[in-house]
Image 1 (cartoon, rainbow, N blue to C red):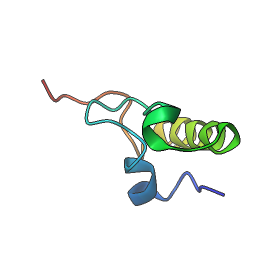
Image 2: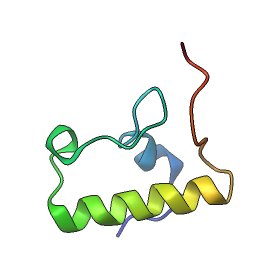
Image 3: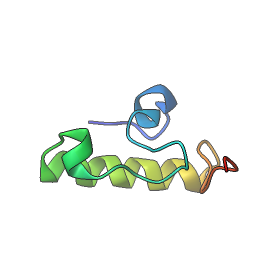
Image 4: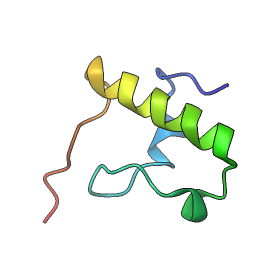
Length: 56
């Protein structure tokens, strides 16, 4: 179970641009990748993670 409030863990699964990393990059199975994506999306909605990064 990945909690949407656990920012340190979620940062491993998002790129420097703020996008969710692909399953083949993270090595997660389908079910875990889906829960990661849901947690990241929930975390973005409550403003714990940015939707995009300003890195250029």
